[in-house]
Image 1 (cartoon, rainbow, N blue to C red):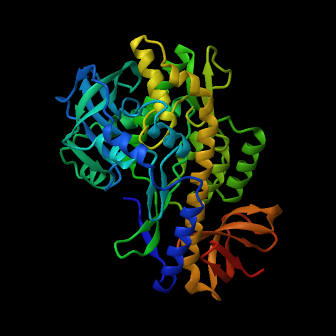
Image 2 (image 1 turned 180 degrees about the vertical axis):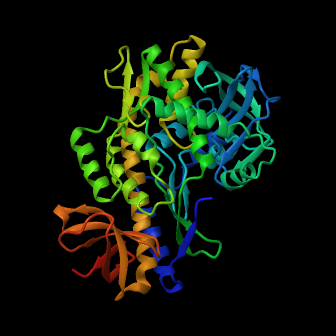
Image 3 (image 1 turned 30 degrees about the vertical axis):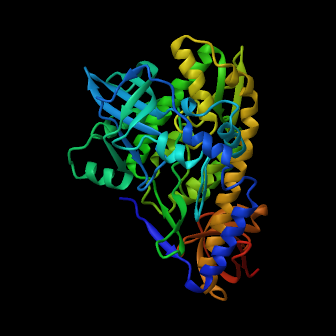
Length: 473
């Protein structure tokens, strides 16, 4: 089980931190609340009649504990020597009226934003956490992907249908992982098998998974804030493979139909590869041969040097974006880290673009024309998603910086040991990782310092309002 550590800012800093986080929310370029027209429309919204009834299929959901916006449900079964995977996605296209108030609000937001003191949802909560969410023991409309896989996990056939489903249970990652580890009966018994086979296929096609530790700001029951950092559980990686499989299927449908929106990422150039090779060499974990994805898979997660290597590898996973097309398919459509064309099509409750992907894929599966609203607005998506992505990144980074500053307040005036993750400004400064509390910062380092080295730094200022940490030169 990956280690989980939680650090909490001292009580004296909590009120200042709460104020700083409130200021962050107010500076967002999106309203926290929905207008009355959007709320009324969401309350009255109903999805179209399904094409088939799959309530006899024992779907389950798998999400972080306490989640309410449940985008996906799954059912895994053996089928001959292979497998059948049913992957149900919340039918957001059926609930949202094109050109309506909910549609307008969602286009302004782009995605659900996760702040330390709560989320700002893409859709009104009556939809995202109730009527459209695939909650357990509730009849729910869904867009159901059905995959036939052979004994190696290769997809031989798939289809997409609008159906009525009923989830049997809402499982969470930690409890489900424990159940699998203990060999207990579980509706997810086949997930390690299918997920493992899909991971092998990813390796064969040259794909790469970074799997950096999650760094999350959490609000505790007493109102205090802290940071938790942990490596993803194995069950999260297996589950991600089902989402990747679905996204690749969606991409293939849209490419065949010659209309769609794909998530793309360019192959890193030779300059980026050479820089990463030098960093890996300096960290004592050289990348000598093979694809970078294969190299990353060899890293031991228990090795303390693995984190600096993975942080350095993040430079290879840049440049992701969206490309739209209608009538002819662009030349460069691959998502380099996945090593295949790929589309976002599994999280429509939380991400705007998925509604277009699913609408286009359903029309393609039925042999119908793509609805005019989706076709006419397709070219707007890259800019909308880029803007919302930048907003989410700023919120996440600024939130973490402010909580980290609060955690560091008691250490002002102290000398602290840290690990150098990455050199900056020609080696004069570095990204450093402090172990306790788990904080990443920037500081000046002695000439000749290499990534992976341990340095001593003196903290002279921790400003909660700005999230800035200052170390002595």
